[in-house]
Structure formats: C-alpha cells, structure tokens
Length: 590
Image (cartoon, rainbow, N blue to C red; front, side, top):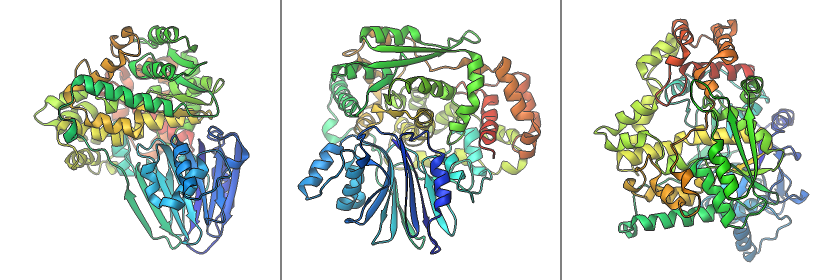
C-alpha cells in the first residue's frame, strides 16, 4: 500500500521532477517506509512505500524493467499474485522480488489490459511503455484505491491524493458548480470523474486510461456488475444462497490475510465486522487484534457499541483494544482529519476512523474492515421503500437525497444554482441497462457510485493518514458479483442483509445478529453543540467564508438558529454538511 504520483509531458519537455518531488513528499503518511523518483524523457514517477507484501528493497518503486521496456508505480494489494506469478513463470518470465508489484509489471507485459480482470485485489497503478511512448493508468473494480488527475494542454499529472496533487502547482482550484450540486444534494457524493475542484478529476473505478505522448487518449470501463440470478441459479433455495455467501466470504477473508506483517480487524460490534473476526479465526489466524472506538453520548443517543464489540472480542479471545474519545479531542483532531481528506466528507465517522486508525497503527500495519456489506446485501432502510414503490426512482430520491432542487436553490447563491445535476444523474443511472427491478437499480447506483465516494474513500483516507492499510473483504469482486445475483426476497427481510445475517449464525453469536441495527456514531457532530457548534459557526460566518460566495446568508442563519432541527433524510446535519466544505477548503488553503 503506497502513494503514487507521475507526470507525462505533451510538449516535448522533460518531466518536472521538482513538482513531482513535492507531490510525492506530501504523501509521506501513505508510504512512510521509503521513497523513490524516476524519470525518462517526458515521463516521471514518484512513489511512497508502505511495506506489506514483500519487505525487501527488491520490491521498491518506481520499478523499471529495461528488458521489457516498462516502468511502473503501483498502489494496492493483489491477493492472487502468487497464482499469477506461477502462471507467468510457466511462460518464461523471471522474477527478482517476492511481492505483487513485479507481478503486475510482468503481467501487463504478458496480457496488456487483459491483466485487469485476472487480478483479485485493490489497486491503482501507472505503467510507462518505453517503446510505444504511452502511459497506461488503471483503477480497481470498486475504486478502493484512489487516483486523481490534473490535465493541461502541456501535461498530465496524477497522484493517490488530491491535496498532494495541488503541491505540484498549476491546478485550477475553483469550485466545480456541478460537483457542488452533487455534494449538497447527493449526500456529499461527487461521482467520478468530477471532484469539488474544477482542475482535478478522478479516474472512475473499473476504468483504464491510455495516453500517448502527444496527449491523445483512450479510456474504457473494464468491469460492471450484472444483477439478477443466472439461469442455473433460478432454483437455488435460501439455504443454498447462504452456503454460497459463506463460502465466498471465507475465500475473501482468507485472501486478505496475506501479508508479511500482522493483520487486525476494525470491530464496530455489528454483524459485518464481527463476521470477519469469526472467519479469520476459522481460517486459523492467531494473535488476532481487534479495535473499537466510542464517543460521549449526546441528546440521548449512544456514542459507542462496546457492549457488542466486547462480546465478540471475548467470544473469539482476541487481543482487544477499546478507545474512548472525549469531545475535546474530537475538536483538537478534526483539523488534522480534514487535512487527510482527499475530498470533503460529511459522514460523522470520518473522525472516528481517523482516531481509530491512529490507535491501530501503533499495533499493526494491516486491518480488515466491514465496509460494503450494507450496499451489496441491501442493509439500508431505503431499499424496502424502493422495492415496494410504484415509482422506485422517486422513492430513492426522497430517502437518499439531502435536498431537493428547490431547497438547493435556497442554500446556494444564485450563480451556483444552475440546474438539478444530481437529480439528473440519478435518473440517468436508473435508466441504464443491466438491472431490471427498482431495488437492483438502487443497489447498483449505491455499489458503483455512493459506496466508492463515501465509505470506501473514507476508509482509505483515514487509515492511510496513519500508514495503515485497510482491506475490505465484502468488496472482493466475487462477493459483490454473487450478492448482485441473490434475489431481493432473500436480502430485504429483517431490516436488510437477511441472507448474510442468517449465514452468519453459523459463525458468530446470535446476540450480535439479533441486536437492534446500529451505526458507527459521533453524536456530537450530528447534533452540533458546545465547542463544536462554535467552531462551525465561525467557519460559516467568517470573512473568508463570505468572500467565497457559496451559501445564502439567510439559509445559514436559519440552520445556526436551531441546528438540531435541520437533519437530512439520512439523519445527518445540514449545518455540518455546509461547514465541512468550508473547513476542507480552509484545511487545504483553497
């Protein structure tokens, strides 16, 4: 797991290694173990390394193979690299290191872009083809690893981190009005390729991009999820689907225990993370470390779920670490958390993941996390509403969107209220082929877009801020593809994730499965009181905030007068959402 960066010039100039050095240095927390720079004419690469798979210098990056005429930087983890390596060796390829990086390099030489569907893992990488004078960029199926791009007429730059990319200079940092509409309407999700900044885009998940030295390019989507059971699966029983889910997750968890360092688990106390602990124990993992975090109760809402995480830790005899965070520490650490964000993120548990990752990084370098289960197994409250509705699109928008366009126009100043871009995006996505029912359309949107640019991005940013690699077994593509084929009637009952919960009874205690549905909460950021509210007020009413000209003063004043009354359909604070954007811009001096 690492931070990667690069530049390709289109104007005949050599790569700007000074800019690349600044970009790479800014990602030191993503890769604290070593660094490297490499250039060859118009192209240059930078790399920060976190040693996980192979601890030896031979797996250092950038990696160049003069015989093959290929050079690369790679961020991620390929869990089936031993099998790929064996296949490549049978074809005559020789290896000089023991990790997955060289397998990706030689695999690309052997198969080109057809390497991508062969790989099981999370990745973003760049390969320079010396003889063809072209650059190949690719991102994994679910966008677990980030890849940000900045293009001008003269050059292309890329990096694992948006703030790092800014350090190279020459970036248009004005706000993208379409992204602003998405952010304030689509639950702070800004779908790829856009970001909040007009001059920065992100390569969409499951896409590759090939760019020639003259700037011409080709981009393709190389993987999509198909919904609905296959012909041979039509007669499968509920028990059959449970067995397939468990078998698939067992394989996924076992793959993600592959490392030259210890692997722990982020244990919230819910079904998803508890199941990971149980499956790791099944797979023979010993000296298993688990980590949980909690906050002070606010407004009658519990700020921790220690009752359930303690139960799992005791049941499986893990080395358990429990972290309780007072409100003052949240305030103290929030500015650092904002600096760690590639993009503004409103979810309350960003700070939870940030502080939890700080603690975990003291004990291990790799953790497994339960993100993705709600999206792929229908765990959210809006899925039954969408499934039962005569108009699934309207039901989804009503349940998920933070604001309709009328309220959006009241929120922002007139220059930003151009059109309902977020609403149009959702309508267009629902209309795409590949999913028939309203439920499947909603789940496809959440899996391919919302999941990527909310929980997955949050986990990557907050763990990598402490040099910690997070692995997400529920987002193994084989698990995702299987879940998409399971009929909705087996996913929706019992507040969702029914097939997963029933399968879990074979592995974990029923008390965790039958508990009330929980949330990884930070109540102090949901209800905004005390010092947190003072901080938010300052962020939204400062001279700098007024000069940006984003929000209508009357709307901000209305939210500030009674913050607890202005909650989105997804139970987030509308005031916090506005404040996060301003605080993120401040954190990155934008």
